[in-house]
Image 1 (cartoon, rainbow, N blue to C red):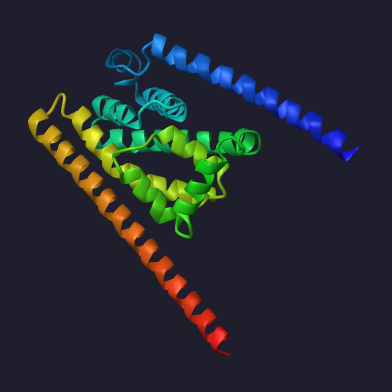
Image 2: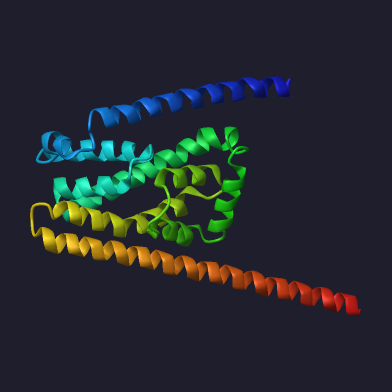
Amino acid sequence: MASLGVRPRILVRGLLLLASLAALGWLANWLMDTHVLSQEFIDAEVAGHGWAGYAIFLGVGAVATAIGFPRQVVAFLGGYAFGAIVGTELALAATLLGCLCTFLYARAFARSLLAHRFGGRVRQFDEFLGLHPFQMTMIVRLLPVGNNAITNLLAGMSRVRAAPFLAGSAVGYLPQTIAFALAGGGMDVAPAIEIALAAALFVASALLGIALYRKHRHGARLEASIDEALESGHSSRRDAF
């Protein structure tokens, strides 16, 4: 009876997964067809519309980043619509909401149904985050490579806890969010200075991410070598006795 009880649940979850994927595909096409992530839409519906504009930007930005649109574009448009400071705050909030949505979606649907297909990548993700999910997530976000949505999906399918993953993402997102919000805000005021600052911040954050990544990789290799040496030393002493 237990086995009979499991199969309907798996079927229902599989159908829900397929339905949600179809809905996400339709939503992605709608966002592209309606040019929601464009300066024209920002000018018409967001900029200068007060709290309604904030809410629209936050919602659209969260949905867009959740389904794979570049978070840098959201940050740029946030700076364009609201200026560098408010644009950074709203773009960061939207990106984190999108991150959380994708993370929870993967944990609710894909973790059990798709883990067997992505098991190798999920294991690599778990091993990479290791015992320091906050620091390693921050490094991943600082690096100028990788796909934001795929990272969120892998995290949802992995064993990483949501709190350190989101906290590390927030810190790691911040430099590039500031950089692109500065670039967007520089369209109207002191463009040369603000875009130069944005470029410098982007390069600095990328170099910091690469340096931290290499440091942690080196530390992990060193720790593994020490553990191996200690284990071999213990086995040698056991053999001696």
